[in-house]
Length: 164
Image 1 (tube, rainbow, N blue to C red):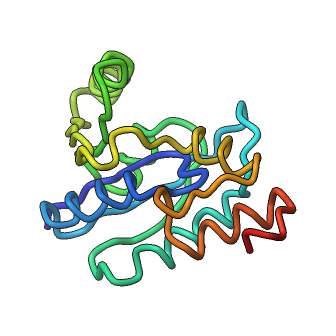
Image 2 (image 1 turned 180 degrees about the horizontal axis):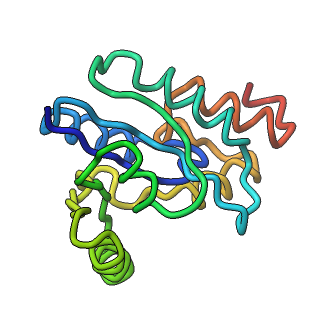
């Protein structure tokens, strides 16, 4: 059985993330989308909220499982017998950063964890969770960036009533 993990903060999940999830799910028997509990960042949504949001957003993709982890991806992958990590790329700058992480993960895992890069579809290349949060924080329209139910949750977090 071919299994892979798509790790990330997903704060919030965007159409770009969902594009990568759908495409990766077609390549693997099981795709585990795992929310990183990054103690360095202050997220908009808790890990538990992000897991629930991802479960809802991916409920129509039967081979996708949603999980969370803290610590190093290589440890999570080893504990779950996963040998492929999926990462999405939007631009060259993403590649430089992601390549370094991929090489480090491969080395630290004893060459047991490979990284597969998927470029986001052009229609989502501009999207980032940070930009979605910034737009929403000023009451802007994020309906082209995230599913409708996610947009409502974001606006609730920012106490923006006229968008809910």
